[in-house]
Image (cartoon, rainbow over all chains, first blue to last red; front, side, top):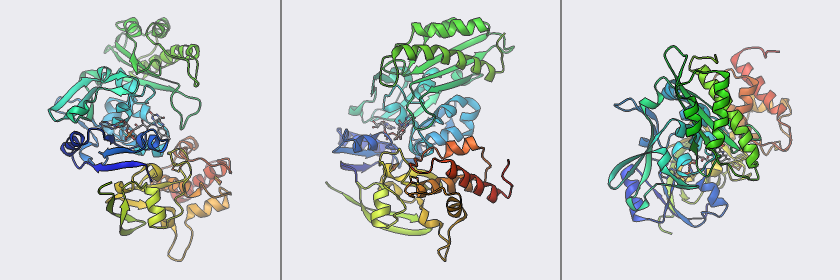
Amino acid sequence: MYDMKALYEAESVEHAIALRLEHPTAQIIAGGSDVLVQMREGKRAGAELISIYGIDALRGVTLDEEENLRIGSLTSFSHITRDALIQERCNVLGEAVDQVGSPQIRNIGTIGGNTCNGVTSADSASTLHAWEAIVELTGKNGVRRLPIHDFYLRAGKVDLRVEEGEIQTAILIPKASYERTFGHYIKYGMRNAMEIATLGCSVNVRLSPDKTIIERCRIAYGVAGPVPMRCPSAEAAANGHRPTEELAETFSRAVLEDINPRDSWRASKAFRQHIAVEMARRCLIKSIRKAGGALQ
Amino acid sequence: MSNQYKLVRCNINGKDVEKVVDVRASLTDMLRNDYRLTSVKKGCEVGECGACNVLIDGEAFNSCIYLAVWAEGKHIRTLEGLLGPNGELSDIQQAFIDETAIQCGFCTPGFIMSAVEILESGKEYTDDELRKLLSGHLCRCTGYENILRAVKKTMYKRLGKPIPQ
Ligand SMILES: Cc1cc2nc3c(=O)[nH]c(=O)nc-3n(C[C@H](O)[C@H](O)[C@H](O)COP(=O)(O)OP(=O)(O)OC[C@H]3O[C@@H](n4cnc5c(N)ncnc54)[C@H](O)[C@@H]3O)c2cc1C
Ligand code: FES
Ligand code: FES
């Protein structure tokens, strides 16, 4: 038995919004792999819950009319990894979420929950930042869309407006973001399964048609700061340059100007900075290879 | 608390069933207490160990972090469902015995249900892939090697192929 005060089951997005407005102190539960564990630990004990798990309309990956990838917020990690559209257009996202916890956790955990928890170590978060994802929120006044960077307010806190009855309904990867773009994610942890990232790094590149120039490079980290973050200095160092060994070196050193990891029981700040450089280098080289290029 | 009880209809091990359950119950609670399916173990109860693992619509889930009311309309399979009409063991259960993949047995039902999902996919997996697919289970007795061997052996048997050396 869970120590909950009440459970309200939403049958549709509209119903979820109405329930939120009616019960402003109630908390949303999607797959529950954060919520139910925290309830067991006593952190959310006695809470009222609004379950959105039954809203099948929020599951699945589609292309919208502008060919943006649209991932319903309740889509589980395993379904994202297996999805043909994701494999074709944003393969690294499928690879990143395939490193979450265990097979069972990947079947229950949702991408909506992984972003709405506001956690810096979330395995989808760095890739979603690096691909400039758009978060879609639906409330009583309709749909609001904002860049994922703006969705994260601070550690554990995202821009979800309870007073408007909002829930997250989708995550979009714009066509301009995924076109001709290839990426790679590395999760550094003490073991392969059932481990929260000590540091997560996601890089993607778009090469010129003849593969000799990096037209656009984007990089983001999880656990390099209180929320997932991009690295503008490193990106500037790579954009418009030839993919060479020296460039990989300059690029990976530049991340130190952007990131701000901390000491924790998992790892020291110095160690995180050290592996951040190496992970950036490896992710860049791998992304270039995936894009059909090679170091010159 | 209002509306504290709810009718949940589902299919468990091939049979359509229904029970009124407390909305605060986990699926583990419902399967053990209401249906006496005690192969579903309570280990960590926070999604870490896999002792409570069952198949829901063909996918493996830790029933300890799954609300009983979510079972509405679902097809659920537990270890009890593997038993033949005269109590015969399935091939994967026999393989666990033959390979000494069981000691205390507490982790076994969970492991076997993950193995069922693996075997029913009809795919041939490498050792590394099998390790990853079984990584959501903790075993404090066997050291995992025998479990891996039992699953691998059954996989090749069902594929009708010899085990590569
Ligand atoms: C054993 C174990 C291992 C784990 N390992 C990893 C790991 O390796 N990597 C990792 O990233 N995570 C891991 N997690 C954490 C968890 O599985 C993920 O964060 C998952 O994505 C949460 O999704 P959920 O649907 O279960 O979220 P829930 O628990 O249902 O919700 C999480 C939070 O988001 C809110 N929320 C959820 N969906 C919405 C929505 N659509 N609109 C508004 N608010 C919403 C909830 O109110 C809650 O605050 C692990 C968890 C467990 C139990
Ligand atoms: S009891 Fe459910 S995972 Fe441990
Ligand atoms: S056999 Fe004892 S825990 Fe696995």
